[in-house]
Image (cartoon, rainbow, N blue to C red; front, top):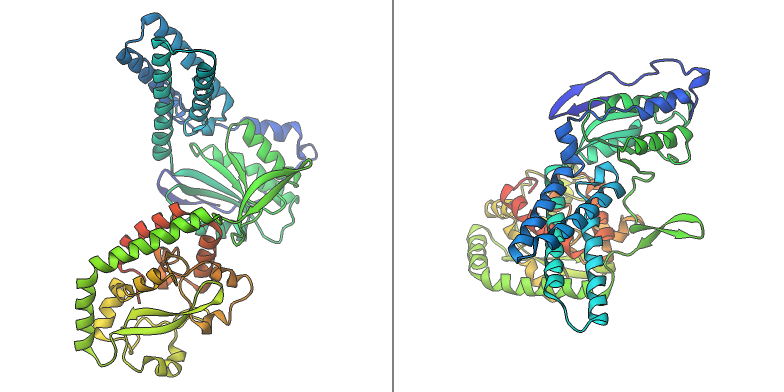
Length: 482
């Protein structure tokens, strides 16, 4: 088991069966039950007040009172309103688990719903709105805004959540590697067992019983169980119940595969099920994306015309051959199109691929070399700065490509796609994408495909804007540009 707590990396011996499981120590027995319910929080009183939202709620109450004074409410009316807010915040604290009290937006949403229903009832039942009622609505609206502000601030302050992973070693290690560079969580420890060990065995039970011992040293931690059949195994289910009683967040990942559509929980009969929803497949999202892409491309072509002219002159003086390189790529649903790029290689580069095949450094069907002898002097600069891709704005304007999407692939690559990889062609290829801002050519073939499919299965306009913003930093950094 390895842990990194409070910014320090410590190495601890792997978990072992530290003590025999006695006959009375079976799952659900009093001895195990006491171990779970006695989990120390490891938090200082001040830290607990912050994490459970008490400080934030007190500031919300103070802001409510200040707003009431500003709008000129009478002391009596303001006192009653303050008591109502105290009751509301107290109910919100009681209705939420400890790990959600500081960051949840539900209290604000419920308050806005109550205000909306109250406003509707007032319009229907009365002919005029009194000044006091209008002031009360104003103050409570300010309260809702303050609750949202408090939640947003707490999310920013507490966003790097300490996370303990529990499960088979291979699944836990894959998940830890995937989350290594995330800014919203930090893996502080791993409680694992050999992947060949059956769930429910004595070894697994021993590891599960050691989870509370590790939680004694971590503040505000949550537990993520990655084991398959976690909800059907008695020991893991008992762990989840015990963590729940100790107000420690527990999440279960029964499927680490993200190659499926966006899922949402639902019920069918008396069973819990996962509905597979195509992400943002409705016409409005597609129309907005297409309009934004083409509008942005048109403006960028006009503003970037002088720069593109300078690049064209540099290519012309550097080596023989056309300025624009045209190549057939595979577009949406496998429809081919001609992609436009500034030429970065010598004129006969395509004819020299076979002689360099043994020097290929890319994985899968890709062909790439860090020191490709076919690249010209100007071409190397253009590749490092991504200026060679500016002519693809014409492809975006024509509708063959999008600003954000999977990398446009060659037919020689798509002919080797398996059925599940072919799904990456269900959207338009993009000038930039999730894999480009996550490592570019430094990524393995499997990782780049995983990122492309993650985008296809979960795309939305907010994701597009986030990728475009990250692209600026990646281009300036030049990391992974061959």
